[in-house]
Each structure stands twice: as C-alpha cells, then as structure tokens.
Amino acid sequence: MELIIQLKDVYKDYVMGNSVVKAVCNVNLDIRKGDFIAIIGPSGSGKSTMMNLVGALDIATRGDIFLDNINIEHVQESELAQIRGEKIGFVFQTFNLIPTLTAIENIALPMIFQGISKEERMKKAEEILEQVKLMHRRNHFPNELSGGERQRVAIGRALANNPEVILADEPTGNLDTKTGKTALEILKKLNKQGKTIIMVTHNLEMAKYANKVIKLKDGKIVK
Image 1 (cartoon, rainbow, N blue to C red):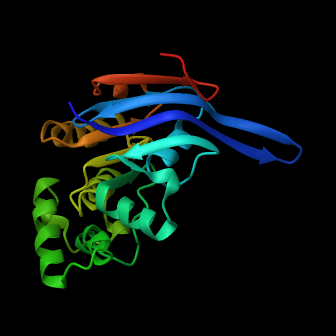
Image 2 (image 1 turned 135 degrees about the horizontal axis):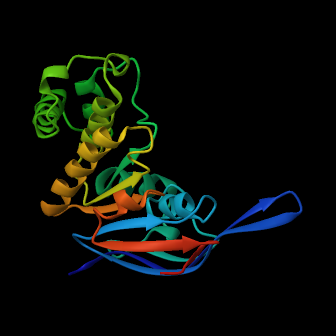
C-alpha cells in the first residue's frame, strides 16, 4: 500500500526551566493508506506529542514528517492549516464540540473553512449524521447529548471534509466500556471504507481494534 505518512529521524524537545524534556526521540515510522494504527504506552511516553506532530498541530525540533509526500516541517502556517483541514480529521477525548452549536452545526463547521456553501454543508452533515446514526439528534446541543452521542458527533465532525487520515486521541477515555466499543466500531468501519486511522490509547483492549500497534517508551518506539 502507498505511504501516506512518514516520520524520518524525528525529535521533539521541550525546554522546561533549565532542563530539556525529550518528548519524542529519533522516531522513524511509515504509515500506509488504509492502516489502523494504535499508539500505546504509559503516561509521559510521548504518545500525544507524536499525535500532535503527525497531525501538524506542532512542529518537530528536528527531522522530517511527510504527509502525502508534502514535508509539513517546511511549509508556512497558512498552508499547514489548509493541509490539516483537507487531509486530517481529529477526534479528541474531551469531544471539543462547540456548546452553542447543534449536532448538525458542529459537524458542518469544518466545511466553512473550506469555502463550501451552506446548502452543501447541511446536506453533507445530514449524510454524516446518518452514517453515525444520529439523525434523530440533529438539532440537539452537546449538553443535551450523552457522552457516546457527543463522541459520535465528534467523529462526524472529523469526517466533514472527507479526510484521508483520522487522528483519534484517547477517543474512549471519557466513555464507559459499552459506549467506547460503539465509537471504536465506527472507527473500524471507517477504516474498512479506506480511511487511515491513527489512535492514541492506553487501553490495550481498545488497541486490539488496530491492525498495527506502536509502543512508545520515553519518546522512543520500542515495539
């Protein structure tokens, strides 16, 4: 399968007072289209830092990160934002929904930044609501939804611009076991439809949904 993401000799250091924390250290990783990757490791192992680097939310201290053959370490922030909007969908542990927007409006929101008309945004958002089985909750606000429903809206929002890659950071962290399994089943189904999924989790049971598991320790890949 074709490479979609490649990390070459990637380091990420943070200066904390007089010391330097090596959050990611000499990581080399190839991710191919259609992969379902789980990144696991203890707290402080560098999982979220690596997710932020892959998602172009942060830049490496040194090394190269390629997304669809574009070296995202060497593009302007405005171009980087465009690349993120088109190619990557994000799912967060805390959902990060806009509380004043309904379910359908939250899903439609990313399409605004791609210049899509309101009519087309609403049509696509309705299709996505059908996909995540939430059409009956389309006009409900986040505080009127259960945790599982909010996470399904968050997954729907990640799909808004039909990205090639979905990054899920502890997507079941705030959900009970049954609800978390439902969210993961949706991610697995999207993977079968061709989406590349990269999931950070500390839960080994959840990691079983992936077809590849990357174990991090002290910022390094150990397995």
